[in-house]
Image (cartoon, rainbow, N blue to C red; front, side):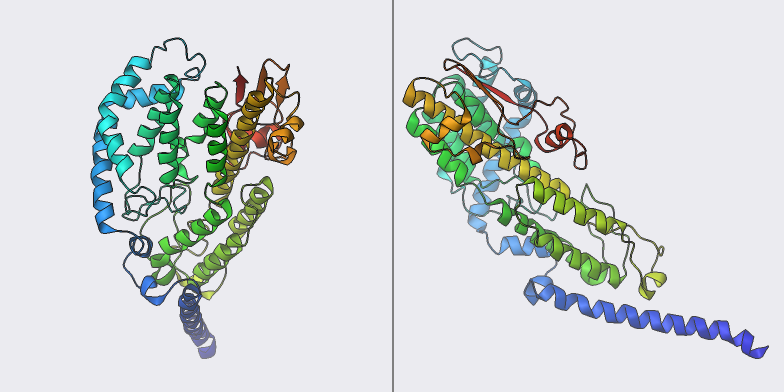
Length: 432
């Protein structure tokens, strides 16, 4: 009887000792795993992501840019309704010879913004700066004390629109060059991207052959998506160092659940997951999206196990930890890759018209202006929709027409749904 009474307490003590040993053993493995990627001084810094970024910036440059960004933000706040209306205007480039109702409001904004635009031209916008928090590592606006950029892209897109409306290609190209110098990549800032506007302007016929060549060159010189993917993996890991080392939750990403687990086994599992994501290649393709979704679904099904999990608070079964919504990012990168192909194809169509005084009969004819057929495919491998009678032509950004623009990551059941999830909307350029 005495033995039976003593057995449960002894078992509990042994369990606690074993769990504590497992916890300590697991915790000891985390730092060496981090040191494979980062130096010790970076790991030990108060905010690793901000420290890493600050090491590559200039305080003097940062100060100048912050002053400019603040001034632009103040002006843009006064014209917020204008920006909302601009994004709704699908016919802004439809007829450049007729006055558009929004012209006087756009001209008024650009007149006030002109001194700020001149200041931007004088700054070295292609250098790293602390206000530019993108780094391809903030797809969901992760906040780590870095100031994100918003106002200048809005200004440059408005300047581009105004220049095209006025048929001033030199001015429009200068806005495009400045935007490219910002180094803004395909993250949550996609709402401020300029390439779709450039593509739309190509159909107006205002660009010369040399200008079209420069547009193509700048598209091809855009940031490498595979490197962008690696940078996002690295930044995510840096942002999670407080949680990885000490179980401290300092911030969550908007598209990810709260990392409620403190168990070392879960943190080790997270690091291993991050490494698997880093090995996904071919970013910008649908195949990469499928690979990322498969990995992510696998990780979501894993609930973790181990004695250390049994002792942690608040509970044994925990959701997967933060920072794994990579399907969203892979989808955005694929949409950007398609925008680049679409812009290059539109430029080739315009060049063909300038060279042969008629539009190509098929996309295969674009080989005559050095664009191979392989460069005119949508994310699923079908050729862009194209129709031409020689005098007029239309170019779609996908191989099929789809109307559902409400696609989200995960709605990949049909071809229509897949393209909708990636491209968000079907776009048709009508050349004239």
